[in-house]
Length: 69
Image: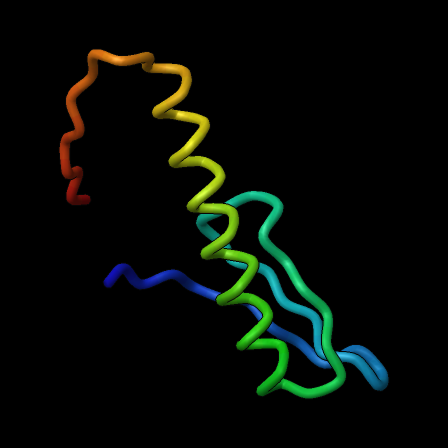
């Protein structure tokens, strides 16, 4: 399991948030709890799409390497 950082804030009646490490991963919900659930779902979807795009671009012969920072 990887850890990501969410930046969240309340703006009027809404909670809005972004995942720092992945551009385009953001959400808006009425409660903080629902925002966290939404951010996790959007993040998972974005990672799955990126994974599929990378594998498709690599073609049939590729190697996967784990990268640790």
